[in-house]
Image (cartoon, rainbow, N blue to C red; front, top):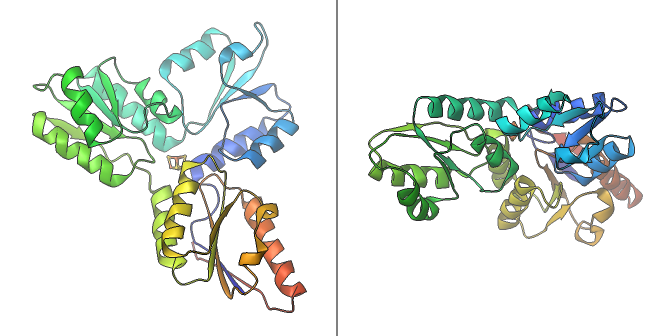
Length: 297
Ligand code: SF4
């Protein structure tokens, strides 16, 4: 079996920085503020090593000296203030690409512009971005949402600053931009979409059709992993989405000659190598050859 691992695989740099910080602060009275990565294996490993997980600052007992680890999604300015007011330490691992969006909306609000964020309304990253903008901020999912929400909430004769959640779909962002162009005299358009997820999607589109099976590894709640599974399934009907090697359906792999192993921005290298090892053992145990081919970075 030839086993292909694409060029873009495993953690993106933002998640890698946050996970590295989490491991560095084990045994240091540190709490993850929300899951540092959408991956159950990593979260349970960190929890087992004593890194607590909180979803609200109230979960830290009053008076306790502790650090709060901010994940790559970032948090609002109010949350940062609240952590400081409680005299807690901050380990801020907001991804630099998300931090840049915070800075854009804070600056534009300060100059009197209204803010339109294109993203999923209750997603933690979007809540964080909105928390650096002023009160005249709206969040829309797509152009339909924009049409319904914007005329009631913002003045059409004013200028706006337009930003997108970093994982937003480019097409939806352009559609909102087109709608806004028709009603606002001035728009500051910012290209805030991160290519860490989109380059993987493009690579999977190219590779999924030339192999006999695709294995997508990553958390079932991770939106970028789910998107990879959807794309791979469009091009290859023998596609499976697993969180760990133990879930592999080997009946779908028996006659496979070429296999693609895809992974999301939140999938650790360990999960990928466990799948590779499992496939290798299976092939060798069944008298077949095994060759691992990694895309060049
Ligand atoms: S996907 Fe992009 S913006 Fe999000 S954490 Fe990774 S590098 Fe940062």
